[in-house]
Image: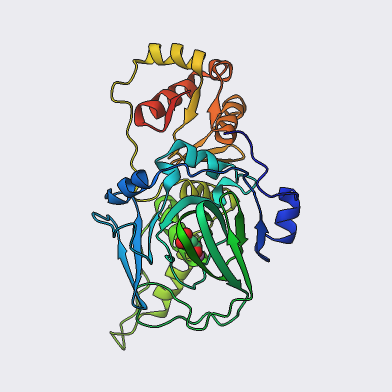
Length: 373
Ligand code: SIN
Ligand code: CO
C-alpha cells in the first residue's frame, strides 16, 4: 500500500492544530477508490475466534441488545438492523495493519487499533459518544452519520450498551467508500447503515491517569529497595495498647519517604506499559524456525520486519518491545530506533547490526515478534 494523502488538502500539522481533540472533520475521498480489505466471510471468521474481541449489536422492535464474542452465529444478512464489530483487525491482517500505520503522524504510543464493523441495512450501535478520538473510514456501502457537540452526555439506563438519552444531532453526512469522518473525544454521533455497509474505525488510546498511577506503583514495587526492618529499642510501656505508637508512625513515614522516582523510572515504566500487548494477543513463532546461521543469511538478503502484533517504542537509550525494555549503546540504538520507526530493516541495515542486536533479533524471530522481510 503506498503512502496515502488521507487528510485531503490539509497537512497533518494543520489537522493536529485545528481539529485534533477540537472539532470534527469530514474528508471526502480521503482514500479515493478505497475497497474493503477483508470480505464479510473473513470478518465473520475472525468474530468466531476466542481471542478476537467482537460484538454483535441488534435493534429489534426498538430494543437494543448486545452480545460479546466469540460469535458462533450471526443473523441473516437480509435481516435489517444488526451490526457486528471486530476489534484489532490490524493484528490479523497485514493490509489492515498497513492502513492503521498510515495514521502514524500520531505517535505509536497513541495508536490503538483498527476496528471493522459490518452493518445490515439500518444497522448501527445507536447514538453514543466515545472517550477517544476516532477516524471513521467508510469502506463499503453507505452510512448516514448524524453528529452533535452536545454537553448532555447522560445515557439511557439499564441497556447493555451506551446509548445517549437525549441525542441532539446538529450535522448530517452520508459517507461513501473512501470518505472519512474524524471525531474528537466525547462528540455525540450515530451512524446508520443505508443498505449493507462496512466502516473502519481507526482508534487511539489514552490511558486514564488512575490506570497509569496504579500500574506505575506496581512497577515501582519491583524496583524499590528499602533495607532494614522496623525496630523500637527505646520502647516505653503502652498506656493504650490498641493505639499505634507515634514513634512507629514517624519511623514508617520516614522510610516510605525514601521511595523516590525520577524521569528515567517513568520512561522505563511508560515504555514497558505502552508496548505491552493486549491480554488477548498471542505470538506464534515460525513452525520450523531457521537455525541461527540460515536466519542470518536469509535476513542479510531479505531484511526483517516486525510482526503486525509487535509494539516497539523507544526513548533515549531505552528501547521497548512487547513489554520488555533494554538500555542500549549508541551503535545498537541507531539500528533499533530504525527498526522501531520503519518497522523493518533492509538486508544492509541488518548486516550492519552488532552481535548483541543480531542475537536479540534472532530471539524475536523465534518468538514470532519479528519475521523475515
Ligand atoms: C460502527 O462502526 O458502527 C461504530 C463506530 C462508532 O460509532 O464508534
Ligand atoms: Co463511536
